[in-house]
Length: 247
Image (cartoon, rainbow, N blue to C red; front, side, top):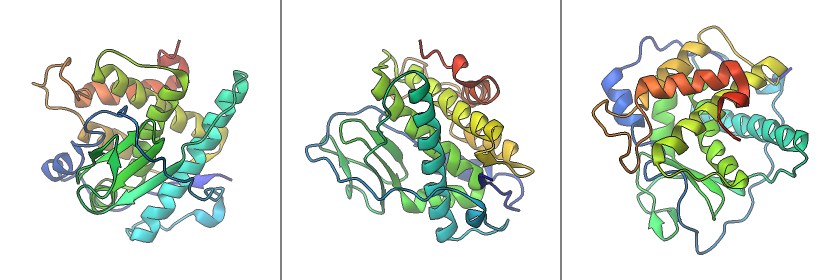
């Protein structure tokens, strides 16, 4: 039995609050300049199983941290299988770094700001602001943690496959599709079990990170509107990686 997501009884999204919380996700782009010093590898994540299932309505930091570990383990198992099927060797990211202050973590000499989650390419790590991420987890639900980790991990896969688009929005929408594929395929394989309401959490959470509809698609840092992002996520969720234009 795989990791299990559970619906937290939080009611409708507090739209403006969530938009403020998550609109900066991946700000500055998922692909950035090299880190001067590569961090060491983090300990291997525990394999998800029945003992990692949490009760609904739990919103503790400990549950959030367990969800991050579960999401990492499911993502790495998924991508390892995809690479193996295509005759390639999969290399997991070096580590996931939580941080609490502006500039506590840097990428390519650029300090990471608060209210952010990002993949750093040459440093090969994912970093996230703990307070921002836990607040989004409590507002949206645990399914959002799996989406967020899946989106940032997709940027790591893009680097491994040598994918580099001309515009940020192309990179970001493909990462949404890949996150959807990892989650949908993991559910279909039994590696991940959704509870009632989790699909709606995905829909609400992905929509919450959409750009302002008036933002030009070619703008640096553009990720796509709520409609574009949810469309790409569910294309991947329902149709797997063949929908993601991986070549």
